[in-house]
Structure formats: structure tokens, C-alpha cells
Image 1 (cartoon, rainbow, N blue to C red):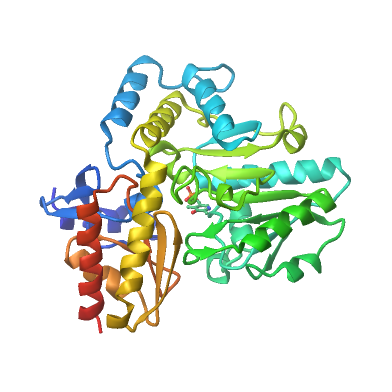
Image 2: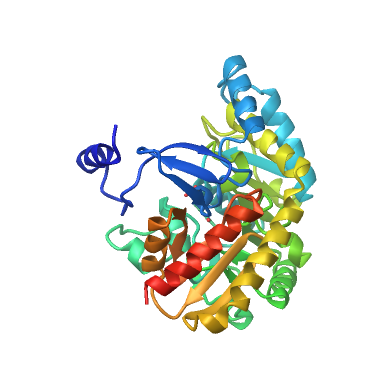
Length: 395
Ligand SMILES: *Cc1c(COP(=O)(O)O)cnc(C)c1O
């Protein structure tokens, strides 16, 4: 079928929630994708920071196919090898004692909220969670409330209560709210959808100290920053500050829908049999894909690759700033980079598409870069050249 025919079907049948771009894709390998008409693109969005080891990595494909032919689903009444092995691997990587698997980011963030509240309730506290402005935690009712962006909430009343939003990097705002009603503080160490906004080192350290003093949970939403995106397995490892609870998803299964919530033992013991559940979470195929993805990250040294390419990307854009006065700031960690402009970023993203590069515009003025961690240096350079060209052509 043609792209046009597919979009016609979509317009007729699908809930009109997405502002779709006029594209449809048929095939992908590594950091390249091909549309229905066979046009080739370089992908520096990677399915929104999902395809971190590249599209259709042979090892991941093999793991999925093998598992699908052996045991596809069994329910959490029982156990399967991929689930038990993945849990062990994540516990080792994170140095956190417990994990629970779900199917998406929002579900992982929901799990984080539930664990924090259960822990607080055990300690005789209320369930209010402090979150940060410009955050993104998902689109289910509770994670929508946690996100708190007015435009996303409109028309969905009653919004679940129990979330208070404060500006990022403002410790005093959090201190002034502290009291027995507060169950925890939840934030992304580097905000993704919010425009690649980085939490300060001192702020994160002070949040850790505050949560310890109050006996409440520090929750990091590492759904976008986790699994090597920032050049370490988890962004909190840059800060040397471990959260009590952490949500993961996006790159975890390299495209197999999967999320996880992790917790340290002290907090995790608040959860008892019957407190949480899922039909699909921890599905053997998704877990096999995640195990293979982690193996590829280790074998291809992708944490270091993410750091190296991230530095190159930021320095290259930074060094061209004199030619591009519209660039306000280049921010990021590893291969999670945002370029803030003094004008709307969407026209630039659309121009990049015309030049066959799949980029991304977020937070109105930011061009976001989250390519596969194993993108070739050549493809990354081509994409940067296209970005510069697109800046010029959208003036
Ligand atoms: C994408 C994202 C989510 C939501 O994940 P879904 O899989 O879309 O539900 C939550 N938090 C962060 C930080 C994200 O980047």
C-alpha cells in the first residue's frame, strides 16, 4: 500500500489523538529506515529514544524469534527463564534490590507511585507526591496528574489528587512543602519531553538528603534516560545518587513494549502479595528482547559510545553557534541532547524530514537528538549537516 492510502485508513479509523506526520514506514535496519515508497531516512529519533541498539538488531531479532517459538506467554502465576534472568540482570546493573515488569512507561511510573504511597502509608504518612514542572510521566490518569501539564489535563476532570508541582532545581520550593502529607519526590534526572532540562548536581544531592531525613521516597523517572541513553546505565549514576524507586521503559526492550519499576529493599518491602499485578508484564518475549538488548549494549561498548558521540554532537553544534544565532543553548548527557532555539523548532524538524532525516521537536523551541547509541559516525555527521542546512532554510 502507499503512504497516502494508509493515512486515509488511519484518518477514518484511528482515534484522532496524534498529529501524525505524512509518513509511513515499512522497513528499518540500524539507524536507517525506509518508507512505503522505498525512500531512505537516517533516524536520530529512534522511536523516541527506544531503538537504542538500532532498528532490528540481529541479536535482538534472534532472541525474539527464538522465544516466540518456544514460550510466548505464561502469566505471572508461573515463572519463565527470561523474566527471572532479566530481573537478576537489572538488579545487578542498578544496585537496587527489587524489580517489577509492566508494559509501558506510564505503567512503570504508576508502579513507582504505588510503591511510594504504600511505603508512606506503612509509615503513617499521606500520599502526596511532589513532581517537577515541565515533567512527563505518562498519559494514564495518575501519571497525567503527575505530569500536570494544563493542556494535557483539560477535559479529563476529575484529575486524581495527590500531586504538587514545583519548578526544577528549586530546593526551597520542595522544603516549604515538606510535612506528613508528603510521600515522595518524583522527577526525571534529565527531562525528556520537557526539552532536555538537566537537574543540578547539588539539587539531586540535597533531594537525597531531604528524603533520607524525612523518611520519604526519592523517585527517579528514568524511562527515557535509562538503559545507556545518557552514557551510563542510568542517569542517576552520573550524580552518584541512588533513588529509592526508579521507573524504566523506552529502550528497555529496544522496541518490544516493556517497562519496569525498581526499588531498594527498604521501600520495596512495603509491597505485599496482592498489592500489584499485571497480565502481560514480564512477558517472556519482551524479557528475552531486553536481555539481548542489554547484551548488545555491553558487547558493543555502547555506554562509552553514547558518551563519545554525545560529546561530539554537543561540541559540533556548540562550535557552529556563531553561524547560527538562533541557537540559544545546547544541553544534554550522552546521546540525549537538546538544542534550544530562539524560535519554534517544529519547522526545522519538518525541513529535516524533507532532507530525509527523522529528527524531533519538543517543548516548542527544542530540537531533540536521541539516535541509536550505535549510529555510525558518518550517519550522525550527515544528520548534523542536515540540521544546519534546515536551520538556514527555515529562517
Ligand atoms: C515516554 C515517557 C513516559 C511514558 O512512557 P509511555 O510508554 O509512553 O507510557 C514516562 N516518563 C518519561 C520520562 C518518558 O520519557
